[in-house]
Picture 1 (cartoon, helix red, strand yellow):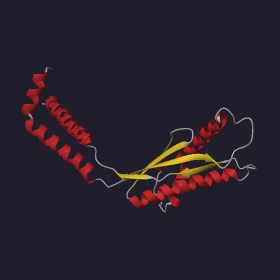
Picture 2 (cartoon, rainbow, N blue to C red):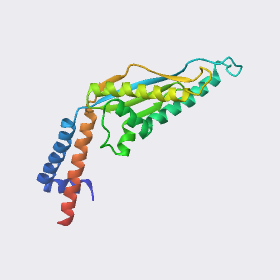
Picture 3 (cartoon, helix red, strand yellow):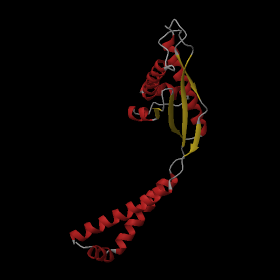
Picture 4 (cartoon, rainbow, N blue to C red):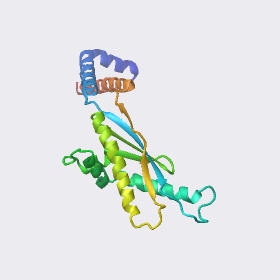
Length: 200
């Protein structure tokens, strides 16, 4: 079919096309506009050392030490992404996770290694107080698990985790998303009109 034929079909069913477009757009827009308020928080965790060993292995601008820091940063990321640690974090923050599925629990907090000594943590919360509580819990649980590995160390060369002040911002609706919703509504209406035309 040519473009003009499609246009003729739409003109013939203009009321149906307009009605479906408006209904779908209003429904999607209402969801975006009335969805619960949420805040996204970004937290930086710095991996550092309590001390250093006097050994010839730590030469070349501390290359081997940076390698060790990088490996521990990877361990820290996996800790935060694990369900057990996330459950401990929420418990420390005073949040009940009894109704959380395993999938939701593992996706609630995101962790990513930014460099050999920097781990970025991000999450969403319904208010600023929850954001602050979760950020403090992440820092505390990460430090506790690090200290747990330090118990059997004879030298004070083990790692420690230092957190920076978290940054929390209100999640706002992206204006570009509204255009996507509008385009989707028009496409869905056009598809429904074509189905009606087919059965006629």
